[in-house]
Length: 348
Image (cartoon, rainbow, N blue to C red):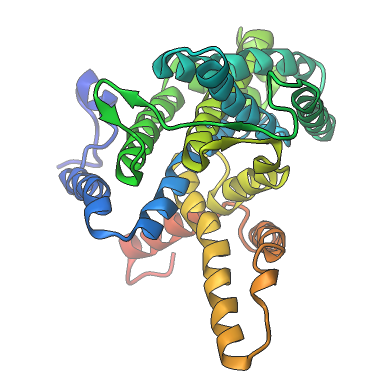
């Protein structure tokens, strides 16, 4: 008679899931995502494209803040560096799009190593302010770049054609973002289960105890910044391709707040929570816009102009609400629901 469920081989330990039902659900979700552009309107396809490239960037922040415990308010700076690295590489230097994508990750990763150096001595609020200051440094450097960076005018970025695939269509760009986001998702899930991920979480929980176990704070904190910045840069390049334009105004500081809101709402340190939080936070402005439009049509009061301004209010309310009601985020609520289902009809 078994007293529990035990994994009996190393291959079982490597599996992301041991449930056939979960695998079936994953296959159905993947098939639905692949086929979505064939049945969805261009507007809905664009919305899910936004969700996908946002997910890539927030997964990077989750590695830094969720796994390693290093607070950053300068995530938008790495998005901006990645977007401009791709734009300059393709438009100014004439490099191949694949090489430009590589530079879109490498340039922010190198910058992340530079920003990560203060993290060896700073933590908490002081580190957050340091990353915030780096954001304004990047803004200033790009605006002072003249013709090379486009200064305040920006750079028009055409969508590429790679290996005979033309990404100028919304469908093709959606599938590109889907492929990149799935690869990022699998990568982050495996980082969490690896030696690297365990070192990150040891630093997050207690850095002094991590040092006593032989974990190098210098090595792993800088690695966390580099990985996070690399993913943010790729996300920035995809964002530039989506809007066909690289400009400082297209990367406002509010994007950093949006990323933090996604982590808090979904659940800090949870990959599933990051996915759920991204969908919810990106949906909030769209839902509020539709609601204000409906109210304007019914009452005759012009409220459409307030749709953009209300975005910050929604993010703030979401952050405060989850911090007060359930700091674990949506993934914590999901765990409670599963526990209630397992122990029914008991209440504990």
